[in-house]
Image (cartoon, rainbow, N blue to C red; front, side):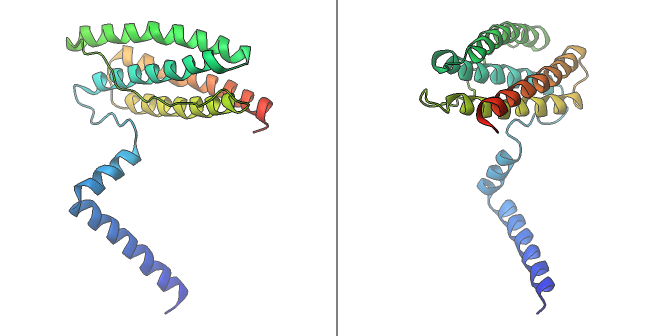
Length: 185
């Protein structure tokens, strides 16, 4: 057989194997769905805004968790100042989001589960781990904001999504500058 025919057969068998695994093994399908989108908001139904609010609250709680580690372990004043400002802003916004949940859905359930990334010990690479974690964290929030922008009809949610995209894109540039200046990356 020719090399291109072997390659084509390999691709077809791979796709067939994945499809078979997906349809015959629910655990396999669930694992692949989780890997595809960490914070899929689901369909554009009447609860999509509630799911987004819970997602943003969990996102802020995860950021606070990271930034509290930074306050305790970073040796850089820029990081400590950034952490203090973001923690204060995120705490205030969390309360605003809970107010939306209560008003729109009569839902006072508190979000208790969120990503808790442990950045490790305070060594010469601590801030690099923090910057990398925050950059990935920001991208997840930007992705969720882009998704809700196509699914929500509430002005408050659309404004929040736009604010999120703008603020986190700018903040990501700052973090990338720190990473480049401090670590040459």
